[in-house]
Amino acid sequence: MNPTFLNHPKPLLTAMLICETPDLAIGRIRNALCDGAEAFCLQAEWLKPEYQNPEVYEQLIREMRDRPCYVTNYRGRNNGDTPDEVLAEGLLTWAKYGATLCDVPGDHYCKHPMQLTDDPEAIRKQMELIDKLHAQGAEVLMSSHIFTFTPAEKVLEVALEQKRRGADVVKIVTGADTMEQQLENLRITNLLKEELGIPFLFLSGGQCSLHRRLGIHLGCCMVLCTIEHDANSSFPQPMLRIMKSVRDDMGF
Image (tube, rainbow, N blue to C red):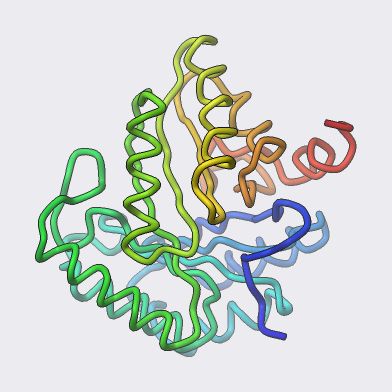
């Protein structure tokens, strides 16, 4: 059976890989497997250009030992000013060489402040890209990184539009700087579970961290974790070994 991010009985403990070299990524993968990682998210935009090739992709995915692999190929970082069309080809290459879940940003082909373009031509091209990824056997996540607190109606609107464009998994990142906003984000998580009908990942940045830890008990299909907090990690992401306990031992 091929790896998948869909239809798991528990939210997947997904280890993030923010690495400029294959050697660093391989070390992170091996350590994460020892800590119980069930999936990986490799942020390909961090790889140096000389390592963005099929041989490296195959090598890294082999190291994951049949765990599903979620790949981003965002603008910036070591991708610099690479056009979206080229980034899309990179995603298709990752799909060809074993990536399970490919991340198509909601403003791919036309930048938008809420990372969900309303440009008809860009939307058409996104849906065409999603069809191509599906044809190669990949699953597709669409992401919208909003980064500020967003009311429930708008979050649901974004999620339903991502679903309409063909996403298998919805990802939305908002914000929470007060306890009231954080509690509302927990309620919105449950709303998405009731209304959306496909797997989703709803996160929030900002000063409050409870949402990232409890979202898996309210409907999120995975949790993005780090195996350590250092220069090659994202500090808002919780530790893998802690989230394994949160998921399995809380009795929620």
